[in-house]
Amino acid sequence: MGGTSIGQFAFAAAPDRLASGACPTVAVIFMRRFVPALTVSALALCTLAACQKPAEPAQSAPAAQTDTGKAPASQPVAAAPNPLEPPERVLRNDAIGYDGFNGSTEAGTVSAKFGSDAPTIRGAWGGEMKDNNSQRPDAKCYLLYPVRGAITHQYGFLMGSDGLAGIDVYDPKALAPGGGHIGMSIDEINQAYAGKVKQVPNPSFEGAAFLQVAPPDGKDTQLTFETDALGNVTNWRIAKRAALEPNESCTR
Image (tube, helix red, strand yellow):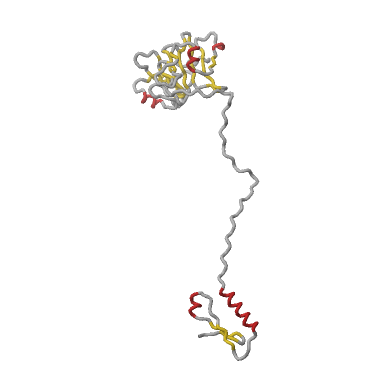
């Protein structure tokens, strides 16, 4: 057994325990003369200290969030409805047809036919409506239009001498008979109404056009799409044939 001499004594460690990493067994061998008890105690303390397992490193605490001095971002809050404003009028997307206006929720119903008077149309709409009749005393037609608070609806009822003469539609959700709607191109209108479309230049706007669709048999009303200079539909109208010029808005 190998040993190491320290001063007046020697100690030895078992080789197998050193190899396994365990604390070595120390044999203190006294030499020729008496070793003070203090020296032996010091040696034992040093040996035990060397055998102790190193302490695990302390887990670092999570870093505190930096105070930027700014309030946390808030989530957007939906605007509360205005109690003074009547609820929005919900229409079927096919409410405007060759026979007139359908103000009900049932398909195929006509609440106000072409030729109806203003009180009938107001009743069919069921909400507030205004008109410009007093501003056009000598005109051939005037505009009756629904409103919601300060918001003008996207429909205009054109009133002639014989009652309802036409309906203008600016609602992108509305579908004309046959499926045409705002946003379609001239080519798409021609495809939807194949062989039935007549294109007429719009005299009020250069490059714009009217796309007149031949009515079904037995109908005396005309479907007309209006396009911008890029050839996209901006609005459409169904009106009694020959009752209104295509560019007559009943507002000028």
